[in-house]
Amino acid sequence: MQAARRYFKSFASGFVVAVPVTVTFLDYVGYVARVEGASMQPFLNPEDRSFNDVVLLNRWSVRNFKVNRGDVVSLASPRDPEQRIIKRVIALEGDTVRHTFKMPGTRTYKNRYVRVPSGHFWVEGDNFGHSLDSNFFGPVSVGLVHARASHILWPPQRWQRIEPSLPTDRRPLDQETIDHLEEQGAVTVPKT
Amino acid sequence: MFSSRLRAAAWKAAAVVGYAVQYGCIAHCTLEYAADFIVCSGPSMEPTIHTQDILITEKFSVMLKTVDVGDVVIARSPTNPNIFICKRVAGMEGDKVCLNPGSFIKKYRWVPRGHVWLVGDNMANSSDSRVYGAVPYALLRSKVVFKVWPPGDSGSLRGPPQEMLQVLRTLKDTGGSGAR
Image (cartoon, rainbow over all chains, first blue to last red):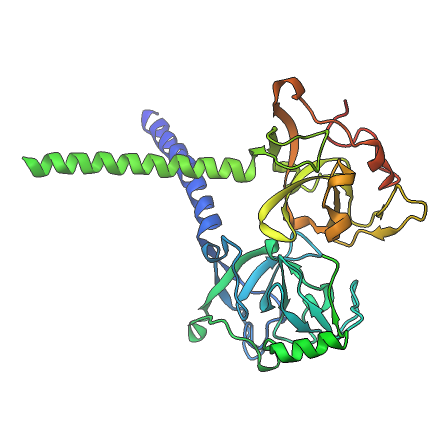
């Protein structure tokens, strides 16, 4: 009976140490997650595979909310706070983004170009037409970003470091084009 | 003989570090998932909260989605993720809020799905949802439950001011934080 009591005491004290340390590690360092859905095809979950990619989510790299264009990030969905979505960062605050009107959403912008307000960014899934992203709900608050996907860990054949990269048709516009568009009044600047 | 003393000292140092890490993690989990002390600055919540007031906030309401209209909450600013704002919830998703209750011609807005409408009690001097729009629910951090400083004004927070009752027509007088 003494041995059993000792066992449970050490179990409980181990538990009390392990849970806060693990939770703190997951909050500050990062963890591993499986990618669901097709919104980032063909980069993540390509169609020729029958199982989903597993990525390493790095929390430490977004602790100051510094993200780069081309990063793949996980963020809380502005439409559903309990859902996490994984998208690519296309534009940062102050950028002018060409808006692809594939779906009319709660925010239909008058112009094809939008200025990303301060504290916000523009995210898109690589799979045009199959992604609910900034083209639907507009610029997103950077405060919603949760982690940066730094590596694809599984399946082993797809093991790679995820480098920031923008699709060729989503590169930032040059200043001359932006000035020209502003002159024409073609850029919507949201109220924030 | 020196090396064994050094080894004993090294083990002791490791134990100290171990305890520090352990208690640091417990502190992080408490402040992140249970309750927190907050010091506010700015005039936007006067007279309910003044600069240098110390508040106790809890995270459970936000996590369990029991935050409601009338609650005072702390959220990440939608325009700058590195700062926090303290405002009162004036509308939940699906509510219809009034942007300018004092005016003759009123303007209304629907609060979109997954968002809340935040307004500072000091409506004349507050930059809030009337300026930067509805705030995504996921930016909310905690709900203010108690003021501990200054001692003369401590206790549960007051209910929403008269002006704010017109922001949302069905805003209940007592709110969620207790009325004075």
